[in-house]
Length: 122
View 1 (cartoon, rainbow, N blue to C red):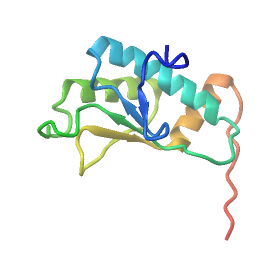
View 2 (cartoon, one colour):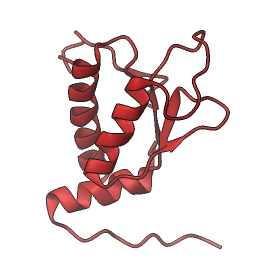
View 3 (cartoon, helix red, strand yellow):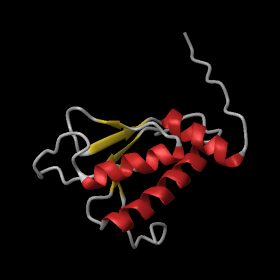
């Protein structure tokens, strides 16, 4: 549905995964598919957008304390199930940050390939 343009879950060029418009069960299904797809895309990739942000509440909604939002707690539980570290942004409790390295590691586990070591220029 996403590839056919029926669902618009990615915003800002594929950086933000917007889940707050969907019922919790649908949001969890979308999250599982999106995380798996993005993780598989990142395996062996050298550059590009890697870190993603999962949006669990609309920007204009009142702020919840960390862990108080039902969708936020559910997203964190799914990430823990996948063994992926996510971080609730302290400045925006409706946003969960997932580093690209975590997604790539998960993708390597899914595909059964070793993760390549990154060499940084000095």
